Length: 441
Image (cartoon, rainbow, N blue to C red; front, side, top):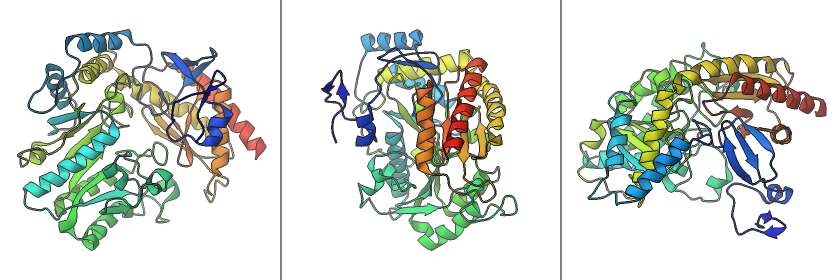
């Protein structure tokens, strides 16, 4: 892979998931951010509708109070080991999260990002079963279309045909995949609600086939990113919870995207009223100001484990935890979870108008996490060409709007501080881009 060119010279920087073709076209250098906007080295401004593209920037750019909390902690205590010792900020953040997360999730370990959180959760699940005398439980159930990160164990749960999985195969054994509740294009070719939630009910059959005594955990996002901000039917998660209970399978809810107000609740699973055994968190926990992720679990999971055999150098990092504390304080003080619900409703109503376009199949969303699914035929819901979706993203970028492609949809996930006027401007540009793309087709 050739290197990036900066000021006419080759840079030494390597980019993630960025093709040579994209690099050859030129890579924007983003130099600063303010509110919901970012600016490149040429001074061009962009309305960021995906919160830094990977969606962590919940409280917006340029929050001086967050930067101050980070600096103050770095001066006081920049680092100390996560084993044999602890620090005040990690203790404080665990107490704060205990009051926010779903009931019974009262134990926390802090890591650097979502992939590490998923890896840690799977190790907790495996060691839980081992301490209970069930060492044979090693299989992980995930869903086709899932994304749970890129570390070794997280890749086992990657349910999409991405090169990042294929290039690393063979992976550790034990991956079991079930269908996702993608009602717009049901993989079982059924129609809700007549389907009786077959995608969830079928998990029981698959567990029985794989061997109930070999299944460690089921992992899933409360709402899936892989199809573009996809919420399941309300019956889905209660069915999955009951099945896991019946077979002694731990349920890991991946809140890395959904958590901290993104869907209009503190956590995405709050929409469904079930009790997870473990949850993973990242992104909005620090609004991206520093790397931070976390795994939370119930007493029932951690109590049987005498020694959790796991270690990251930067686990329970005091500076990262200080950032998480200040970030959550801002979310609370500015009531950004409620704002996400209200502004999300406004945003969803606004983009519903996009369904008038012949190539828009479905608009959906919860809080400030929305998706626009495209099709070449509204009746058959035929797949939309990936090249055309990439073209839409490029059109928006050249008009000063940053959006992203997710599955066969466009995804929108702006900072929770976004204003109605910014939403209106974003929708206006989206209309322009979709009109232009439809004419090009």
